Length: 139
Image (cartoon, rainbow, N blue to C red; front, side, top):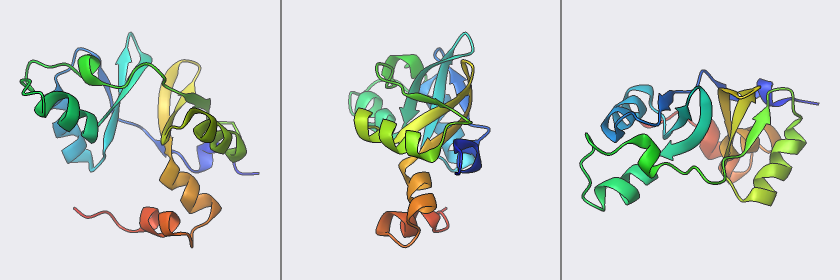
């Protein structure tokens, strides 16, 4: 059976909770990604998505240089999974917790992310989500 380590995106971009939202936005742009892992003392604190930046910062007219990642990230229900966990466990966690991504950890240290799209590509590449997720990104 395939484990999370075989489908996860490794080397995730991690920023400290005190980093500015502007720094996060630039990291997302430069890395062609839609989220960063927010850490505090090297541990997972939250996830910050491009949507969080728009809804919780820009739409509220906050200064992106002053607003921190920790202020606006989703941090209350962060679901983590081990790199050795089977794919079925990731599917069950996403379903139970209604999340679109899981932070992959080694102990408490973030080492990757597995997304709904990653699972779709693995499980059913011919599904609409699997095909979309497998397509080259629009840069």
